[in-house]
Length: 200
Image 1 (cartoon, rainbow, N blue to C red):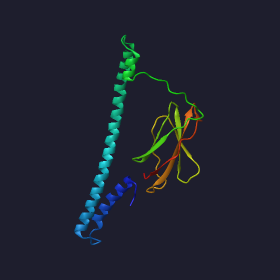
Image 2: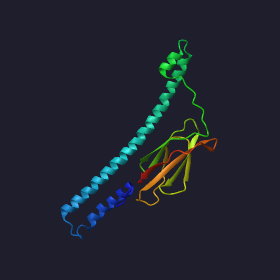
Image 3: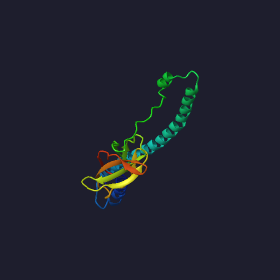
Image 4: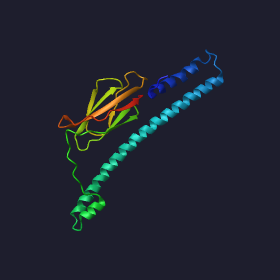
């Protein structure tokens, strides 16, 4: 049986179809055919339910991000007006936590990003810290391999690696590493290597 969910869904649909076709040829008991068909229906329903929830999540996330962007702009405008108010003081700014503090200067020799991995629906999510730099170069390799494969320059975290499995149905133990980038040049030290088993 396929381990990749999308392929398994098709496999189950075909199994149920062939079960009906060959039940008489194989002289299968009626109850067995009914039970196996029910198993196929339960698997299909469970997978489709997850697919729908994933879709709903993506729609909800897009709506959330849109609302945050719109309403955040209104709050930023209000904060600027607060600071122009004659009664405004640094104490009030601190109470609202709207006094910006400059980021510590970036040392191009010692900068090191921190990464965490997560497995999503047909992708690996690579979350990384930037600490004020432009972005990071993302690298990947299979566990046990020597050479790294450059994937992309990621400007925003997380980066989602949507590459398919090299062999369908065969999970891969992948390792990821990132290096900071400023002015198109890699800086600092590579992040610690993080690994994850990706099943597709």
